[in-house]
Image (tube, rainbow, N blue to C red):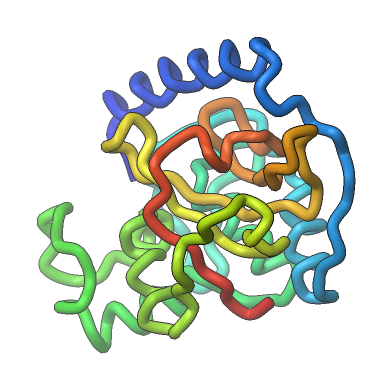
Length: 208
């Protein structure tokens, strides 16, 4: 979960992405790839957030537990994934991550200086989700080719080599054959051609 300075950096990167897209690099073609029924449900739940989540807001918020969420008009990249799993399958990553962190706190990153789990924020931090999915056996090798990503895969990456980001691989592809992704990189939920725009750090397939 980035700080306010991280948000400023994300907005700067977003401007670069927009310029990259306008240059003609992979305008969406809309072709749909075959996918499993669970993957289709997950993707549909993420796609339904487009036009609903309109802002990127990394502020710390006290949440209900379990099932807590910030207002859907705003959120961060992790909220796209969290909401999609809740809407598609009734899976609550807030509860799942908190339970695993409470039992295995030492297995999780300590970069935020916490002495104990915090159900308000832990599941909304990309490094914690990477750890949880890895501990759940969901981590896969990064593909050598773009077409080896499967619809419903989860990706993690570093924007500008320092800002963690995540989202869901779509079943739609760009004109260049690269899968689009469903995410919130700075302007709300959207479906973009940015899978190869930043350094990828993880690929996960969880419950699909």
